[in-house]
Image (cartoon, rainbow, N blue to C red):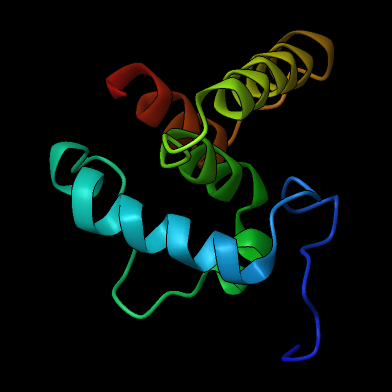
Length: 108
């Protein structure tokens, strides 16, 4: 995967590169994770792996850590709200990943 520069649209916002996702995950771990102990990201987990295992959770983490560009962050938050509505109301999805993402959004 070393040659890939953007994440798949099914796993992460397509405008966020894999390198940027790694920076956002590191920022979350460094600055935010301590105040959100209900979602534990194991040490050594890379953004690409998390985006493939738990794409919604990675998208939430990228969104809350994207505070360097507030207009884009607002667009990302609206997209997350749409996804949550779609998953919970239209598809009746229930998963730990969805709960973790919602918990991070509430705590943020």
